Image 1 (cartoon, rainbow, N blue to C red):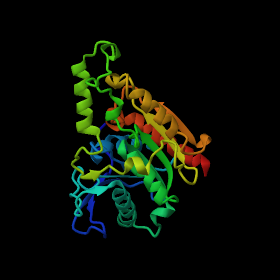
Image 2 (image 1 turned 120 degrees about the horizontal axis):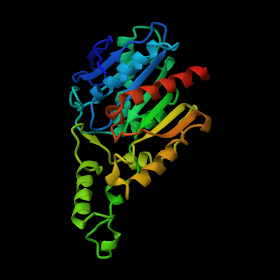
Image 3 (image 1 turned 180 degrees about the horizontal axis):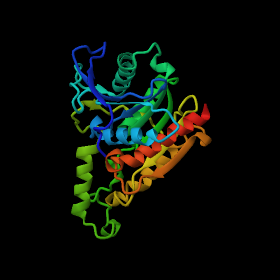
Image 4 (image 1 turned 90 degrees about the horizontal axis):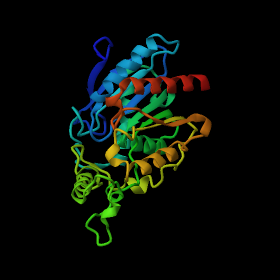
Length: 304
């Protein structure tokens, strides 16, 4: 879907804490009277541009709805997309959480141009992958800000994805332990590819140190999200991740089930399977993501 028909603003901001570096953001203003702000949080791979079809789809869906248009905001963390590198160099996930808080405070002052602070708005986080971990840690530090969360194929914060794959060169490994149609060499290559891409020590363009993530979020179902927010948990389609069916998908399904317990059961939806989608659900089906965001907004409206 084209985004040219919506009045989206692409801007940059220099945070007061890092005045010599630009953060790039995309902002679509909502109705003049709305106090709802939907914030999109990237994973490690895709930049904020990956959310633009979803932003456009939300705007279009709500044009024919009784609900007010919310403000829609996406941004690239330092080192992502069109944002500057972090002037402080490599940083950890708590640094990213602090940057997010300052970004929300200062971008709201810049774009909303009202006397209301970010704490006085109804904030919804829509997150992919490690963005879900950022949102959970943000909620721990600032429990009064977010009223709703949509998790799209959350990172399994405490799980070593590399260790889920067997060591085919271990003395006790037997050929009959191989999945049907798979060779030792193929499994060895997959494990090595996981090590290069997903191990916490693997470098990333963002310069984000993930080594503390497992200690910060050692369980999927805890710590609970304070304030009993609305929550939607969405997982990828196992058929799209067929190669991972044997070792990774069962663990991921259980992780998503536990994630759904982070709030009260009556405020939790899911896990929902995004049919036909891999890990990057916002890229694979932006209309589906828009539908889930609109559902979240409706639930929040009904709960007020």
